[in-house]
Amino acid sequence: MTESIRERARRAAERYVIPAAREADEKRVFRRDVLEALASEGLVGACLPKEYGGGGLSNREHLCIYEELGRADASVRGFVTVQVGLVAQCLLDWGSEEQKQRWLPKLCSLEAIGSYALTEPEAGSDVCAVQTTATDNKLTGHKWWITNGSVADFAIVFARTGPDRRGGLTAFLVTELNAERMDAAELGHRGSDHAELHFKETPGEVLGGEGRGFEVAMGGLDHGRLGVAAGAVGLHQACLDAAVEHVRGRRQFGKRLGDFQLVQGDVADLATELEASRALVERAADLQDAGDPEAHRVTSMAKLYATEAASRAAGKALLLLGARGYNNEFPVERHYRDAKGMEIYEGTSHIQRLIIARDLIGPDPERKAK
Ligand SMILES: Cc1cc2nc3c(=O)[nH]c(=O)nc-3n(C[C@H](O)[C@H](O)[C@H](O)COP(=O)(O)OP(=O)(O)OC[C@H]3O[C@@H](n4cnc5c(N)ncnc54)[C@H](O)[C@@H]3O)c2cc1C
Image (tube, rainbow, N blue to C red):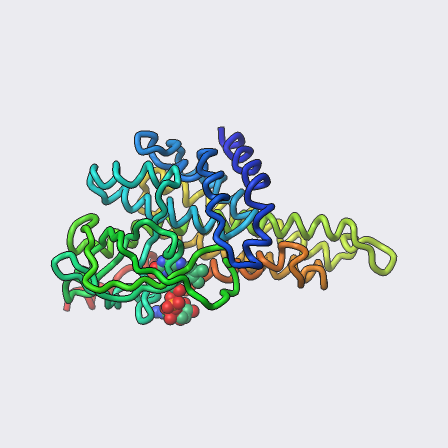
């Protein structure tokens, strides 16, 4: 079963995503047509229940889709992570039946695009510093770096409804986004849409109950981080494949690059870290599927390890390709730039380390007692 999903995802990635990726990156174009083609193949929302238009796959089975899309283009994989991993999963976990029926089938068919709006200029890693406020379900504030923001039909927006840092956050479904696509040419993910959203007494509809925003946000991030981690495995695989192909063909000093032991060491490291990443990501997916309480920590480990390993892999592959790796004739240069972003969004590597360590060490009982 898993192989056939992988094959389907790979065929679609080769047919639709890879041919468009270089131009989308160069021209900073968001290719909705590519995403619609993936949706028509059942590859957007495949992990959602069939009753809501999904394919009913487990998280573990769904990894293949993220991986194959990540191997082709991190911008496209990133779109699916937001649309499905963050937005659809938050709706599935926290929405009323009416909210699920309204949005989930459309998210799968791409009749609607969703975005997840948490970050603000003063609230990045510190998500509880959100300053957007909501009074009587009317939102006022400003979000930035919101993936899909200017192409979205709605966003899940996190706003402050009370003074308590965590308990004062509420999630809202908002359709009036007043979005502005961000102008600056980002280092990577240039085929994505990133926007600023502006709210002024903008109506919203509560998702998951007042004061539950922090839980909604964190639950979504657990799903999203799995998507980022699996996408990183795909990007890592693409770098390994490019490096191996190159060192097999390129000759210097009278022999193949791949016959030099220093080069062999790089190839071996690339391949070994890839297997370690993939195993860790699969373990996180299995724990999520089992509803295991360790899933949260292991998902952070998977996101941390897989994105950092992918970044190292892209750097090594780029070096092995020499000057060819340094221009956009080969996709490794794009993978290198995209990998850096993956270490930042959905919680930076520092934040993943904090989550892992705090979960293991636990709260200080003396501080709790005071
Ligand atoms: C490509 C891309 C797409 C994105 N898409 C979305 C989206 O769809 N929705 C959304 O809401 N946001 C999105 N973001 C925003 C992203 O989630 C934030 O950039 C990220 O959470 C980090 O916040 P910041 O940029 O404000 O950095 P800061 O929080 O200012 O962090 C700066 C540095 O300080 C470190 N740091 C911060 N606090 C600590 C600490 N306590 N201990 C140790 N180190 C710390 C960080 O790890 C980082 O290295 C996106 C960002 C990018 C780059």
